[in-house]
Length: 132
Image (cartoon, rainbow, N blue to C red; front, side):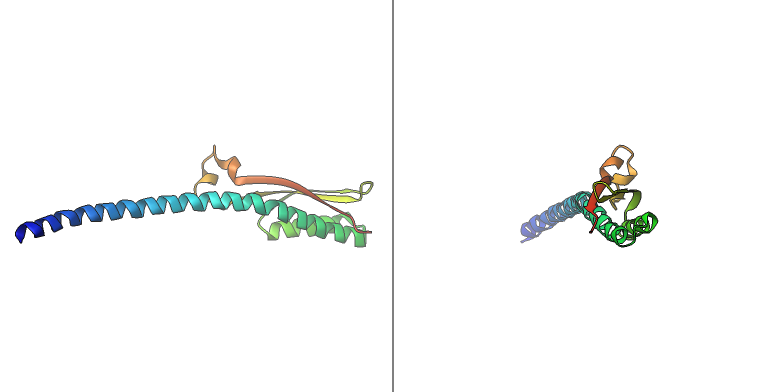
C-alpha cells in the first residue's frame, strides 16, 4: 500500500506541472488571438467608417452646398467612431465627396512596439456620390 501512495504522490506533482503549462499556453494563445483579432477588426472597420462619413457628408453637401458643414459632418462621424479625421474633398465635376481617415487598433503590445506600429494603423480614403 505504501508504494501505491508514493506513486500517486509522485504523479500529483507531474499533473500540477502539466496543468500550469497548459494554462500558460492557453493564456498566451488567447493573448495572441486577441491582438490579431484587434488588428483584423480595425482593418475591416476603418473603410466602413470612412464610407459612411462620406455618405453623410455628401448628403449634407447636396442639401446645403456648404463645404464647411459637410466637412464638419464627416469629421464628427469619424471622430465619434474612433477614427482620426485627415481630409475631406468635394469634386463638383465628378459629383463625389471623399473622406480620408486613420484608425489605430486598440492593442496591448503592437501599437507600443515601434516596428509593429504600422500594423496597428490603417489609413483609408472612401468616396460617395453627391445626391441630386
